[in-house]
Image (cartoon, rainbow, N blue to C red; front, side, top):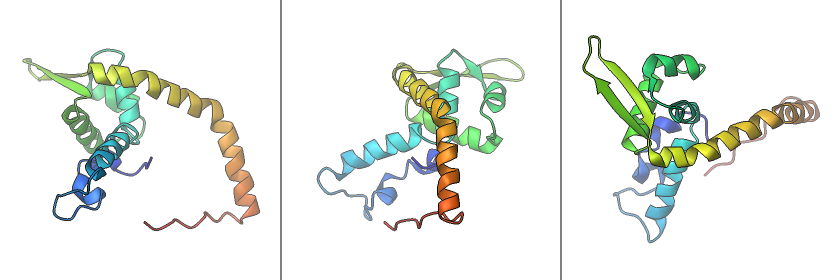
Length: 150
């Protein structure tokens, strides 16, 4: 799963899946929807946001602190997309200034277990992956393999 801005662009199904006029070949729409969902929930910022929101209502500023490296704009865009996909519920409290909280929806809570398992896997294997990268870089002069087209 990419780490770029898939959180923002996953909503462009027809472009991402190759449909020029918005129509899909049989089975292509389902495959594209699955890919969109996986791109969204596997996006660089989505995992941290969903893990935080699954623990109860969380405010924007708290998410900003908890999701290391995210910009305000990217946090806003990712929250909007997760809300659009039905993974987050946004509640605005009528106070001055307005208090906004985000809560994981039931489908996000179902996903939470898998996300926690994935993050624990990454933590457990972080050193092994770093070692493998160092061995690869030594063996290949630090060059990354070519990116396949398509």
